Image 1 (spheres, helix red, strand yellow):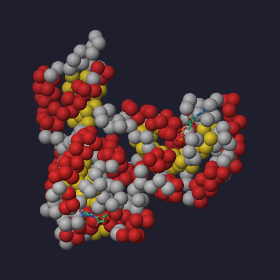
Image 2 (tube, rainbow, N blue to C red):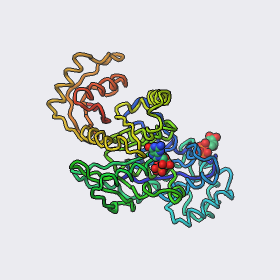
Image 3 (spheres, helix red, strand yellow):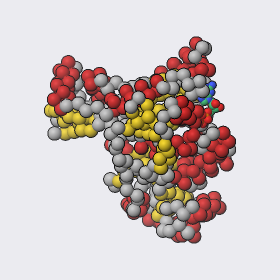
Length: 435
Ligand code: GDP
Ligand code: GDP
């Protein structure tokens, strides 16, 4: 799992400017998946070679769940609780404000690992603005300019210093790790409880390897499934409601650990922005994806509603059109078990390995039939290709000049690879390297 750094601070201090500056390097990392909109609140990135996740709590206000400030504060608090490190941004121009003091108290009380960024210190002539902030009692304040980059050398060093190292989960070859994600009330708890109850098969809650996540193991048709972090999900009713609002950091952690993410959509309410966002994260991380439309019992007999869902998928979920879709009802149990067929199928493809010979034969065929167009004066040439890794299938293509790969040609090749190798239901990655 990658360490998570969360940005907090009062409105207008420059959190999103900082987020943008830090996540700019992301371009190089994320294979440009057309259709994925840039997320303003979460980015998976590297700072000086150290991989981490960055979350801007300022964006939480937009999740459209509850406009009350109290709720926003709750979100921020949860974000802080789950973070490995917090960047606390203050406005150097404004000086120490009461809100800063309040936040500093909270962070100190929680004993969080804080890096204090005094923003809007746009050059050495502003350095005097930093001193006041020693009074917050959060260690050395760093004078930075999120807008112009001043002070970023030391600041970045502080961000990555002594971060907990990335932990790789031990792979159990016979076990499929599944994360069930979705917005509150989509029916996650109903689904998980039904799965774990219906089959009356061995169910054991095992303490997860990290951060007290409690997972559930489930056996079905000779396979073992590990449902990630089910403790919070399984709790029912009021107790749950109070503590289990959507948490982005939690969702990221579950995504990190899973092979296949089941995004549970609330069929009755349609696809929300939060749903597409989670799908974007899953895609970013190259996780297998199954889209489950829940509460089908309520909509299956209404052609109008079914049409609406179909249109919503075409409009909002096109960028993950490779993900199989299951219509189910956690309430009646209808098609809940067929969810496993989809999970199995995605997992098989997700784990597929294609021999180098087969990859190259296919590549030659594809390129012969549809050679890349000339860009400027250069012509793209393919030397050879190989599958560098699985989960997801990742192919390296050696070319004369990677800069000549047009994104539309990359998309074309990606689709061709999917078809050639039966990888139509898993994310795959193509990387171009210069020979
Ligand atoms: P947020 O509400 O905390 O996310 O703040 P924003 O990132 O939206 O920034 C608020 C305002 O401060 C905007 O007008 C920014 O242009 C400005 N701003 C952000 N960073 C800097 C900086 O480093 N220097 C100066 N002078 N202005 C900045
Ligand atoms: P969670 O917040 O995602 O865990 O959602 P819950 O499992 O607590 O379900 C939220 C509400 O939706 C509850 O009132 C459930 O009874 C209801 N619900 C869940 N699944 C279904 C379904 O398939 N059909 C119908 N009609 N209601 C459902």
